[in-house]
Image 1 (cartoon, rainbow, N blue to C red):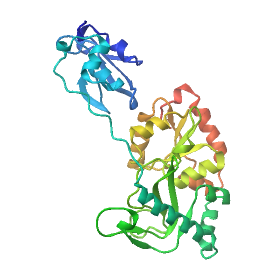
Image 2 (image 1 turned 90 degrees about the vertical axis):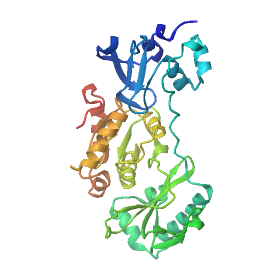
Image 3 (image 1 turned 180 degrees about the vertical axis):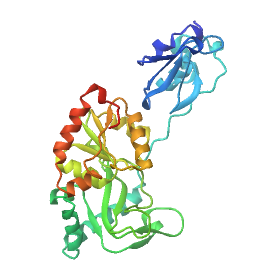
Image 4 (image 1 turned 135 degrees about the vertical axis):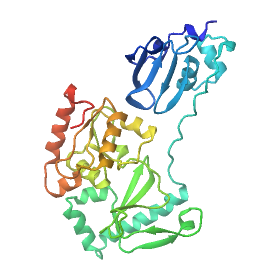
Amino acid sequence: MISVASIDLLQLVGVDLKRKAGTRGGEYAGPCPACGGRDRLTVQPQGGEDRRGLWMCRQCHPDWTDAIGWVMWREGLDFRAACDRLDVALESRPHIPLPPPPPALEAPPADRWQEAAARWIVRCQEALYDGTNPRAHAYLESRGFTAATINEAQLGYNPVDLWIERSLWGLDGDGRIWLPRGIVIPWLHAGQIWKVSVRRPADKDGRGPYITISGSANVPYGLDDVQPGQPAVIVEGPFDALAIWQATRTAALAVGTTQARRIQWITRIARARPILIALDNEANKNVQAAVAYWLDALAPLAIHYPPIGKDSAKDLEDGRDLAAWLAGGLEAAATPAAVGAAA
C-alpha cells in the first residue's frame, strides 16, 4: 500500500497542463476533460498540508480534492474501489469534500407532450400547404428558403392564436398553454420532439419574435447534423441554422444566447472540427457574452467568425454567398493563430 501523498497527480490526471504559478510547489492548469475550456482544470501536485496533490475544476468541480477523488470522479468508483485502484490504504483518506454528483442530463418532454406536439405540427404543416394561407408560404420563400428546406425542416403554420388546456399536452397545473400564430418550427433530436417554437409575424408585446411552447426542453437546433471531424457553425436562431444548412449542407446549431449550455450538448458539439461561432453580428452585451462563453467552452476547437450582415438568415434573404462565407471561415480556422480567437 502507498500513501496519497506519494501519487504523482499530474501523471494520474494525464491532461496536457501548463505551469501557471509556483504556489505550493507549483500550480498547473489546462482544459477539463469533462467540460472543456482552456484552463478550468487546476492541479497542485503538492497542494495539501501533507504534500498530497490536489485538483479542482472551476466550472464543474469547484471543490478541491485529491487523487482518490479524481479516480472516483473520472471512473465512477466509490471510495473503497478508488483506494484499491490506486493501491492506497483506506486509513490514509484525508478529510476533504466528496466529488459532487455528475450534472443532471437534459431529457426530452414526456411522451404525452410529444404526441400532442406531433399532432399539432402535422396540422400546421397541412395549413402551410392547403392553399388557405398563401402569405405564410410566400413569407418563407421571401426569406430565401426552398421548398425542399421547408419540407425537410417540417415547418408549418399556425393561422390563429390558440389557448389549449395544459392537461391535453400532459402538463401539470391549471390554466392553458399558448400556441401563437406564426411559423411553427419543430426542434428534433434522436427521433424525438424536444421543443417547438413559433416565429411570429410581429413582436407587438416585447416578447421577441420567437415563442417557445410550454413543456419544451432545451436542445441545440440541428444537433443531429453534427458529425465527428466535420465543420459546424453555432448560430443564434433556427432560421439562421436553416440558412447555413440550405446553402452549404454544413451542420449549423441554433443555441440562442443563454440556452443549450449543458455539458452533454457541449460534448456532442465538440466532436466537430472546426467550429465557427457565428452568433448575430451586433454590439449587444448578451451576444458578446455568449460568444465569449462558447469560445471558452469549445477551446481550442472554435473561432469567432461573425455573419456577413446581421445574421445568417438575413444574409440568405439578401442573396449573400453563404458558401463563400463558410469557405472563408474554414480557411481562417485552419490558421493556428486564429483558433480560439475572437474576430
